Image (cartoon, rainbow, N blue to C red):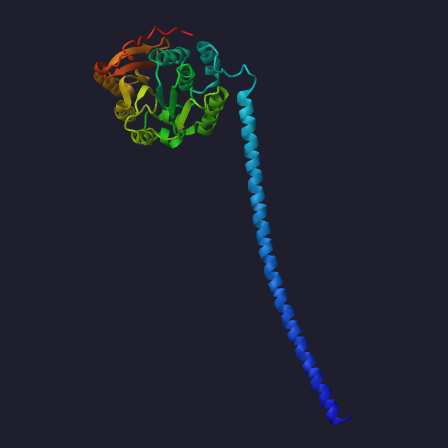
Length: 310
C-alpha cells in the first residue's frame, strides 16, 4: 500500500476515533443530566406521595369529625334545641356531660341567668361543661346573651398547684382530650355554637385577654377552676374586678377547706345572695353580689328561689 495513502487512512481513523470519543462524552454528559433529572423527579414524586398521604390523613380526620358531628346531632330528640322547655332541656343534657354539677345546682345556675337577665356570662373551669351548658341553655332565652368558657383541658395545668395526692393523681390521669371532645359535641348538638365563646387558656392568661377590653364586665361569673388554696383565692381576687357592679360571682365547693379563703374574701367584699349545701354533704356552692351599693335598677330585682331537688 502506498505509504501516503496509509497515513491518510490512519489520520482518518484517528479523527473518527476522536469524533466518537467526543460523541461518547456528550452522551455521558446527557446521561448524567438525565440521571440528575430522574433524581429530581424521584424526589418530587416522593414529595407528592408524602403530600397525598398527608391529605389522605386529613380526609380521614375530616370524616371522623363528620361522624362525630352526626353522632352529636343524632335524632332530633337526642339534644335539646332552641324553643324546648329549659328545665326539660337541662334534665336531658346533664346525664350526657362529664363533671360533678348536680341537677339541683344546674337548675340553680339557670335560675341565676334568667332572674338576673345576664347578658355576659362566664365560667372559669369548664371541664366537661356540666355546669356551663345549663347556663348557656338559659342564656339562649335572654336576647343578646353570650357565654364565655375558660378551660385549658391540660393535665399539667390542672396539677400545677397541689391539692392532695389522690385528687392530683386523678387529674394527672384523666383523658382531657376525650373530655374536651365530649364538650364540643354537646355544644354542637345543642346548637349553642353562636352562644358559647371558648378560650382554651388557663385562668391567668384568659384574664389578660379580657383585660384588653377595659369596659368588659360579666353579669354572672362562675368560678370552678383549681381548688388549690392559692389558685382558688387568686382566681377570686383577679376576676372580681371583671364583674359588673351588681353582678354575681358563683364559687364552687365553698365547703372545701382549700376554698375557704376564697369564699371568705367574697363574703367580705360582696353580699351573700345564696349559699347552698346539698344533702349529700359533699356539694356546696355560693352566689355573691359584687359592690351591692352600686346596683343598677336592672339588678335590684334579683331574687333566687329555693332550688328544687331533681
